[in-house]
Length: 88
Image (cartoon, rainbow, N blue to C red; front, side, top):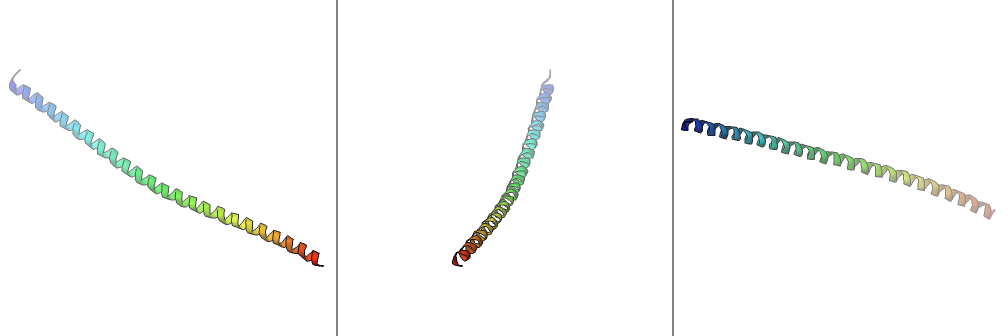
């Protein structure tokens, strides 16, 4: 085998290694971009969930307050009716 053939073989191997390295780097960068996009989507979804949770808390609080107010009014009405009968 001549020196030239050996050199061509080495150069071909180096080119193949460089292409493989470039392909691996491209795949790595693509994966990083995908992870970044997924993290952004997750952060957006977390914000949406927090807003929905806060809205649900607000609704529960309003319902609870309405129930307490109604029961308090009913108790006051009963107490007022009872007090009115006692004074007669």
